Length: 340
Image (cartoon, rainbow, N blue to C red; front, side, top):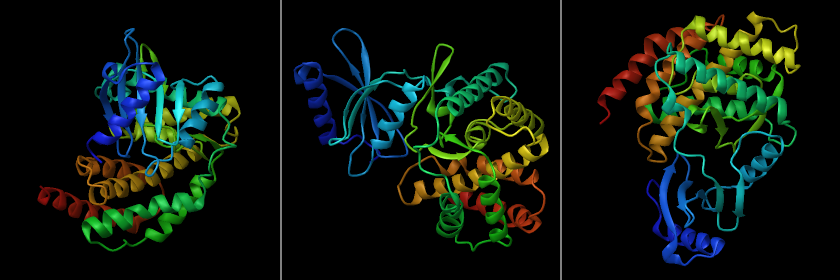
């Protein structure tokens, strides 16, 4: 469903007209965004000049209940999330605050740019707010099964379906270590897709969106999603400095035991980054092959570099590291070159 569904759009227009006491002809809806899911977002222009954002999430394909529940809880906790003005779960329609058209990604330049670094500081500060204010008790658990299923996307979709390759040497040992490392961390509220496209900029403030997949999980996960995401590549020194600053603040707030030293937490962060990079390599291939989404294959080399950086910060797993450099990277690049 890469394009807007005319029948859904007509239903949404009727719903908005009834909500605001307008005739159907007075409803001004403009497509604002779509994403990797089946959700679509439309900007509603009201006669008084104000705007709202309408979410169209077909209930047979998208379950909006987690989004609604989390939005209400996080708003009550004082977090910067869009206000829910109307919810119709039976039709899959929601009316939200309009947070504008500027995601954090649009504000980022090069990795060493002062503006980019400043925005990352603000985004990390918001992770601290999220973890301090929103308890994880009512969220699904980011347990060993879920961590493992995420990792298994790599051999299933990236290796098997896209490259026609078998699981590499050392895969089972690496998988076990990455899951164990994640489970050894304190459990906090995790957005789970803390990406620069899911942080909306209004003035100097950031607002959280697309949090429907939030879980109770490892303390470093959202930090890693930000620092080793789609848009920037920080060198090892800068990455370690971000991670250490986060560790110190988390320890001061009581979310992390003070006896977890800098070396230990950095290793946990590297393992978490490796887990997420492997997951993303698999997901991007699945989005391309199964869901016919475009543009994701071009991002694979970026996340491969993230994976290599993460593994370089972990001891052991030499067989897998060697396979990654000598077999996987050449195969990936050759496949990309031959793909129209």
